[in-house]
Image (cartoon, rainbow, N blue to C red; front, side, top):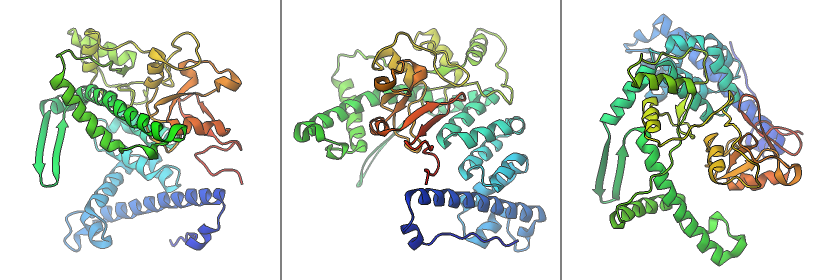
Length: 418
């Protein structure tokens, strides 16, 4: 069963046009997926035949480490995939065909390792494969975590309780410096992060104003005096100083928690003495209780926050798009700006991953008179908001997936036209 892949040499790559390099990258990634599937197949057969006992190994994982020299962690990940693919036939075939990424398969294997959702996962396999193929990895992971929380509400609640009980702050001084770390629940973490984010934005603005004073309108992020990491540390110091020198009054930030109607009603009824929430159907992908960035939140916390008046009611359609927030306007500001951010906080440009600090009209306002409502908006970083004016267009399909087209009509997630 010998298969040969002709990989381009470094010299050949150096002479390639951009579209050829893009095609080469896609081809090599495809080969990597096929090769990974073959590795899993070898491990699967070796495990079934128990060849690992011949030299006294304790498992097929130890056998693979000894034979190939791979790390124990990598071998463990492959063995986890091996066990998952014994139940997930479509995932196995898609990986063999190079149609699904290795990272996405490992994420599904992580889900499969949870015994409480394993049987439901086999019934939802086709939906998971579809999401894995169409969405970015970050989006896909948000959706798998959302699905896990709905499929195993009891387990999610126990996990949240355990994290809350283990909350802590640790500080340490060494010759290398001071270390500060905190661990707690996501709900408290959201609030802390928003407070820190507000202070970090003030630090950024101070650096930006200083750069503009020296370089004028030609200033760029390269001219800023501090890195983002340095500004974040200084922002943390500013938070503590403000608390120590303030008048004791704290401005509570607005925390947005996005929860589907069914999940919220079930947990609200349970809080009032009703029955415990039931696991969602395997094929139900509409369940969610999370921050706009996709960080999972215990639905019980969402109910408590709502009863205390700390959250606003947000309605989303089947694609996860927030409904129209009111009258049209040129810029996304105020409450409308927040509603757009609830739809997503990362830049919509494929591969970017930075925070979307600006809102983009998917149908341009200036030239096409696009409406200023959430359905016509998406988060983008400043760089890509400006880059889009070079002839790129963005749109969101019926499933809520963002697409960016080049001026030649090709999608930026694939090789450009020759």
